[in-house]
Image 1 (cartoon, rainbow, N blue to C red):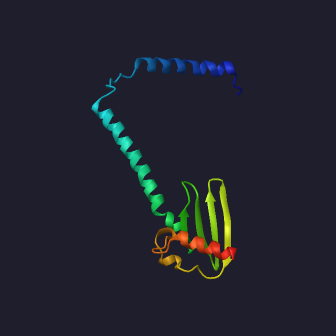
Image 2 (cartoon, rainbow, N blue to C red; image 1 turned 120 degrees about the vertical axis):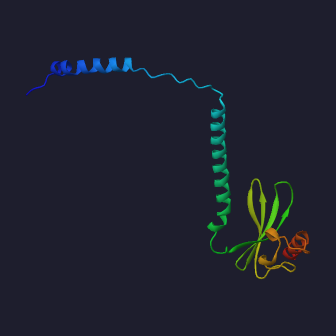
Image 3 (cartoon, helix red, strand yellow; image 1 turned 60 degrees about the vertical axis):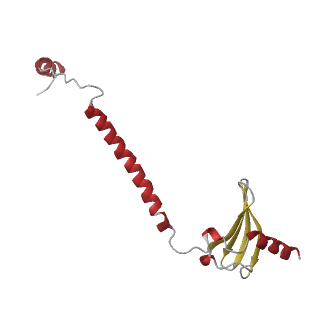
Length: 153
């Protein structure tokens, strides 16, 4: 049995004509919906509320579980900081038994001074401090001046 293109088209052509006629006869009824009906407005508002709540929920979850990523306590502990300008500041950081004085500017970060040994006088352990190493009752400016004076001598 060999099939030719002519024979195949003779069989399929009547089926195509019949299906086109049935589609033309069974035209779907047009449903008229007002563009600003109360249902469509509620549908759009509900979708908006769902999307915004998903965004806010995801942001809350990311913020909530961000602390879990840190794991073990860090070896780098911020001890104190001082703002020198709008974008400039000096940080005192303790890394194991080493103290590092760091200057931060928009152009970069630079180690100003580093020394081994205990914490400077008047500064306590980082766990007993106020937020980000601000020590109550011991101004950082005085500590910085004393350290710079020690460095010169």
